[in-house]
Image (cartoon, rainbow, N blue to C red):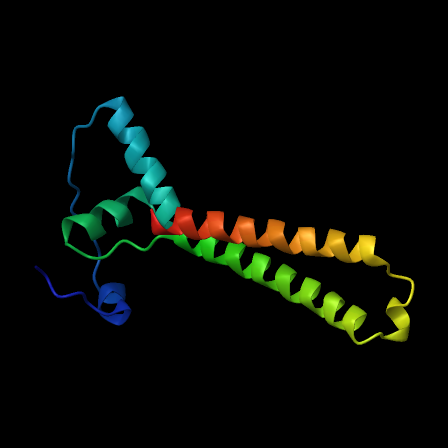
Amino acid sequence: MIAKKSSKTIGKERRDKRLRVPVLPIEEAEIKSKATDAGLTVAQYLRNLGLGYQVPSVIDNRQVDALLKINADLGRLGGLIKLWLINDKRTKLIGKSQLHLTLDSIRNAQSAMLNQIIKLKK
């Protein structure tokens, strides 16, 4: 395996050799899709695979972003419940029905987070 060179070294060298790889149309589509998912060009993707480098996954980053958003939603909902429980004057008009709706929102957010975690583990 070739040692990965720094970006400074690569900047001085020019990649002028081309490799031709015959593929079926379905294989071409899948390679392009996987390269896009990894945030790479097809050439970068195939070069990384061919040299044994780890291919970064943008999909994982998207799933992490989704989990962070759900976590923020849960934090906001928790803050609302805290205000209600300490009898803050801003929440005097909130009744039990609103509290139950908030708790339902928390359960839905927890379920969404669990689904994202399951997808991330696959």
